[in-house]
Length: 367
Ligand code: BGC
Ligand code: ZN
Image 1 (cartoon, rainbow, N blue to C red):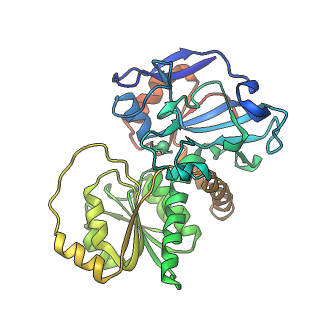
Image 2 (cartoon, protein in one colour):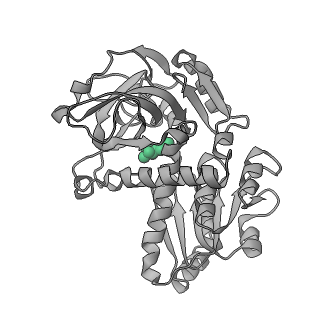
């Protein structure tokens, strides 16, 4: 079968690879689910992997099949699989268990192991191929009515985890009733964070760099959130105008925004950090003031990465609620389809030169 792969450690090596097709029996205990891939999304992580900044090949291989935002249809299942059947639409989770206590209880996303296994990213082949097989434990069923937007589930889970963690942490306050939220960044994750917070009934201000109007600001306003360009109003001025924020979700990929966000956070607020920033940028910050306000305001800041099965299941519910409450909104995020695995160069061209792209994805096979 065909797959799109890279040579980790060597920049710009994305290529079409030929691999033996997987079989249901590749997974032990009759728990295999063979999936025919329909769509696979790409994001900044794929860009970094192809730039050799990130990612490792599985043991015994000198290449890594990429793709961690999969969507497909079950082709066959092993004898001990009852959760899904052939014909069902599914998405697979990304991280596989290591050995820490968090992995042992199914929360692989919280691993404390230094080496972690992520399909399509680190030490495990991904989903950018005609088929993949995995244990039913990692396969999440998508209702038929969500097939058009199923490829958005994995990025949604990253948001779901961050927000669920924030609410979990805020149980410390006994009576936390968040009203105002800010989202830093209006890219795919920022848009999805805006959506999830709107579905929870919060007032949301989403900060992006580009002056409005453009597609992303239109999308933000279409679900009743406010878009604010930081070219027109800095985050700190914006916080005065729309704040103080009870919850801030940071997804700009630009680490200095973290320190502005710390200052825009209200008393008892929670700041969720989700940007993976591989560089070594340095900035000067008003450290005393930030620290003082954090201490006197009982504020909290939390990092979040990846998502376990629980958040995939919450994500499915939120995608369904979004389609019901804001019909047609999610499909508008699917801006840049690329047909066929063989067009991987076009896929990466669109990813590296976004030109208004929200979600670039490969249509491996028709829905
Ligand atoms: C993926 C996550 C993953 C993270 C770090 C993100 O792009 O969506 O699942 O944990 O990269 O590798
Ligand atoms: Zn990702």
